[in-house]
Length: 382
Picture 1 (cartoon, helix red, strand yellow):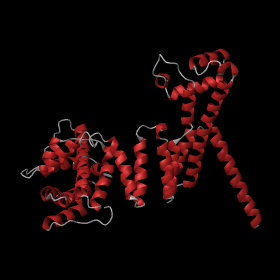
Picture 2 (tube, helix red, strand yellow):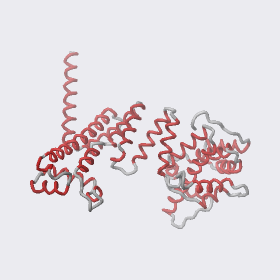
Picture 3 (tube, one colour):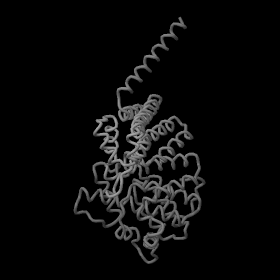
Picture 4 (cartoon, helix red, strand yellow):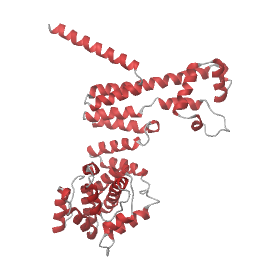
């Protein structure tokens, strides 16, 4: 009986694999990819991994066949006489009605318009450029990324990291603009979880190369001016003046500034922590203002308290704060100022937090700091 049951299980498994193979043969790679995401969202990680790997292999095989079709054409003695002149080769393809190779060119031009591939109209168009594009199209960074996501969900951080790094190395072929930043965040987060903080720092700084206001060389003066506004010794309304003078809505870099701010705070580099968490403060509140203006065109900023009151009047105020760690960032910004020897702005941030009923733990910490300021040391990243 046991033997018969085992045979039945093996037969069923074989049928399932045959069904999977048949399905993937009938479906394009992008469809298999989306099916993998559905499996992933439902927690079926084994099926998801199979789908992502199959999508990657399907795409690789598809464009490898196209590359081979193009190589075969270029190997024909009659075509070799044209040298690397794509215009002559395309005329040959049309004259001979070579449908397969014509479809290859159509696929390439669909993904990369001919004018973009050959911007200089006066120069000869090399056919080898088509081969370069096809070789690049064999890569599928989105599939590599999702394979990494699956391994991460299964707790295999080392394999996940290698997959994310592989996806990032293929970023030139990403189909979603800006997705390379998401991959960098995943790489940085794996390093954070493994306490590889130097590597985490490098990846986060790489993300900030996309922050036009943060650029190290051209905007040092701006960062210095922003910091001086918050440190002004005779100014009684520093926070509100800061948000009146400066506005910057760039949500893609918030988490990078946040993690670097926490990291520099934990490692005792308070001046660096202040700079990064100051950007978090600016960007988060700029997002709030822009969202309110989108619904209330006549809104104008007056005070930070009024801004948060306007946020709380929205139908779903929690959605504004979702994932932002708003109060936590404010607390560590204030405490980083204190660590940097600037008690006045530190007290401003603590006072603001102490008056926020929704700030929870961070309200309590701020109240403690106001009663008896002290430099709260973090053994690890907050």
